Structure formats: structure tokens, C-alpha cells
Length: 262
Image (cartoon, rainbow, N blue to C red; front, side, top):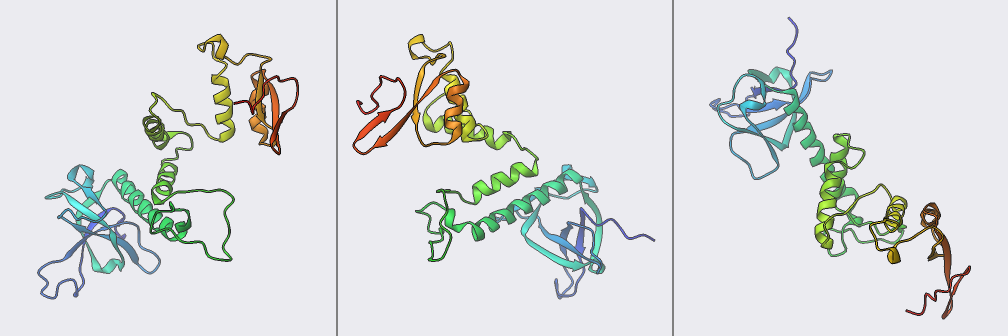
């Protein structure tokens, strides 16, 4: 007789120290098939909505059997246990819901990893921020993020959203609200942002006096990234490089604009 497919099954744990009076057995959900030693990983199940992180399950989430009431999978209460101590109860989670449970576990682990690994990148006022220690690496850029951002990035990857996705759409909406504008547009890089910004300034919807047209001179920095200059050339304008020479400003080319006049 072949062994049962354990993954996704609801079981009760039959071990003597669950309840010495044997009046109650511990329900659990099996997360995966047993390893070579017959051990498998389970999550504890409760019918009471816990305050801790949990995934709720109803009968609509099942592929086999029925639940008497809504159950909660306690993500922080997993254990490895031998299959001989488990008794199936004829209830199985659907593949889709089981994937949701694994997703929730992955994101919970992601948050914990970020708290342990990225403490130095938290906001300066955050009491959980790790202070810089002598001998530590000094980052080249001031990245500031917490576990929420790391979780959002991993969440998008789990859905294989490698482009905008729901997280990007949410940020566009929230950024527009923060800036007090109707719309905001996210792009893949600062280089693309430069191109989108200067291309928008060539739009025929702008008054002609405010529009950048072919041949117009655009003042930019003399020492910058190549894609600061490339968009100017791409729209047919002429880059005019500005540099700082002590208390004076000097602009190359034929520009008659004095950038220091303002």
C-alpha cells in the first residue's frame, strides 16, 4: 500500500505529550512531503482568530472534506514531526490556498531576514536602526528602507511581476497624493526618468514659449552621468555644460544665459 500524499492535508498529531489525558489532540496542516527520515513540516491550526500572523481557511479553500468553522494557520508555530505521529482527518487544502500559505511564510521570513540583515538602512529616527561601527562598510548612497520595502520587492517577485505590477501602481497613486498632483509615473531607472521628463517638455500641449524645440539650448552639469546629456540630444536640443569655478559660473558654447543671475 502506498503512503498518502501528505502535502496540504489536515491532520491531528498523535503524541502522548500533546495532552496527558488524551482528551484533545493537536490539529495541524502538513506543508510538504516527508524527507528521507519520514519527517515533515506542519503548521499548528486553531479555530480562534489569533492576534499573531495567521492565514484563515474556510471550506471554500478545500479540495477535500469540510471544516466545521473557519480555521487559522499559525505561521509562527511550525514544527518538524515524524509521519507516524500524524493521523489524516480527510480534509485537504486546495493547491491554490496551499501556495498562499507558503507565500505568507516566505514573506514572514523575509521580514525577519530584513530586520536581522538590513538594520543599518532603517530611517535615522528608527530606534531599531543599527549604528555604524568602525571598520564597517560606508555605503556609497544613502539607501533608506525597512522590512516593508523588502517584503514588497519579494512579494512582486513571487508573483513574477518583473515590471510595474501592483506594488508599482500603488506607489504611483501614493506618490501623486503626496505631491498633490493628479498623476505620477514610475520608470525603471533615473536614466529613463530623465528621458521621460525632457520628452514631456517637448509636448505640443505646452505653450510654445515653454516648449523645448529642436535646436534649443538646455543648460546641464559639466560633470554628470551620460544619460543626463543623452536625452537632451535625443530630443534634438543642444546641451550647454555649466561648471562652477570658485565664486563665478562659466557656461560653455554660445549660451547667453547667465545661470548665476537668478
